Image 1: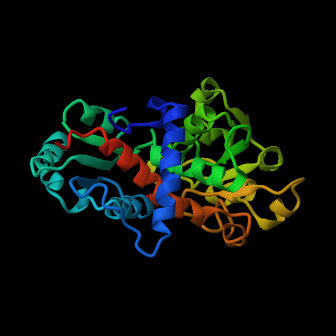
Image 2: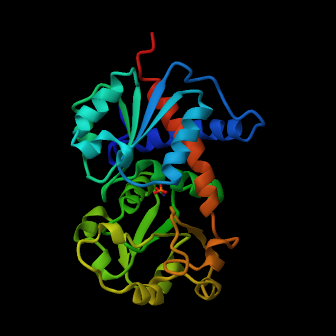
Length: 305
Ligand code: CP
């Protein structure tokens, strides 16, 4: 593939190559000198039209560890505020000899649209409620690291499935690798199309957790909800908040994940988030190696003569 627009467009073989490349880069970033000179001739623009902490910093670190030149663009402080279009904005940046664009944008499909109008590699760092492919890849990589493999594992994604790009990309990634996927949450936060994706649906958190090997706890995406949702935050926490008491009463040990940012005390208690069950910070650590792999593999398709 020429871009990373979504998990939907890549194969299980692509995912395996990304993971094997990430394995090598994970060794690199654990050395005293955490850099390789591979991309000294490449310039990358990180363009964020939405807020981000983990993804933005993780991409920037990944690029710097590969020795790429990096420029950072934040829409909030840019000429987008004066009415400049997306294509004009990106083409102006590309004219400064930029080779690759990492972009987060609130509109689903913004990256696909851009890929038809610009001449640079594009990596999707999140497009609205649609996909967040690098998050799904680092999530699967973290499951593989913790449990040995993804194939055959049972993963439940809990929470606001309807507004979550993390959920959709994870569903595609996990299924491509042969995992079984369940979603769990209130009916109001499960999209109607979910049945077409071949995932199980469970509304009872305890039943879902007793079924799974891994639980990926999602945040309620208040910023993407047009109307005030049902249930309320308090009701949601009572029914779907993951507590130590719930974990202690399961039939087996499970791995707990969260893409961040966490709303402590809402979808997960601090006791669980900071417990030995949680691999939340391993996910963040792995994000750098996985993003290095994606950038490195896409850069190999740029004509660098
Ligand atoms: N997981 C994630 O995308 O976090 P940020 O929004 O902070 O980048």
